[in-house]
Image 1 (cartoon, rainbow, N blue to C red):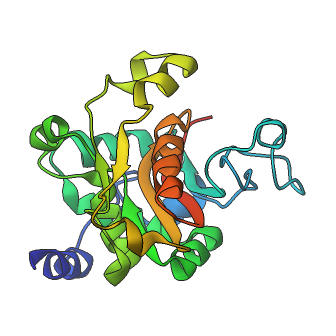
Image 2: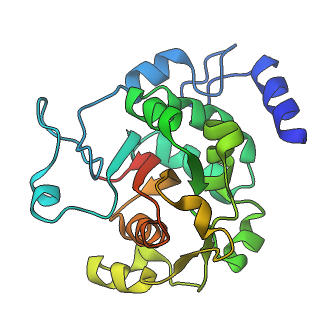
Image 3: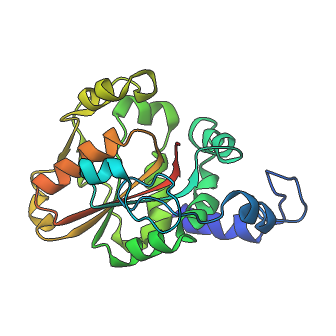
Length: 231
């Protein structure tokens, strides 16, 4: 119950931009958003940057991914790498609001949110949830999807190694069958459009494994939305 009140207070209180230090400003001022978060042409299936005019990259044409669509707000680069690290690892969940606003400013993400039947955050393992104190994907999802968020539908059924230390083939093996839909809730997925939310997409292996579990449980369409996409 405290989150909506905290968000309103944070937006109303005087602040400074954490990128350029302008005062007064939002946590990321409009000038920095314009400089570092301009909407660019991306592959509609994996969110990698594409030359203008193209809609799907060659890799996704050759091997269509599990996600029906995927959209990212920014590249995983300065200044977003540092802000995401603060959000995830330095106990600063208040970043969820400005970062979710950044995502919603992308037309493709806003459309995906508005057409989804359910907004599902990527689940964390119990160990990582205990370490961080909150699930950053859930905090973003709550501010994107309002009443459509379903945080208990998709389960992480086994712990995995950190993906950052693995190559692509090992990443895929690492998260294979790591996710499952709550069997008591699976019926609600039949024919639905699910929006899968995460903070950072690297290889896409985790999102693909989660999308596969949702589709096997009956989802008709799974769209991924992420704050940042690595190059």
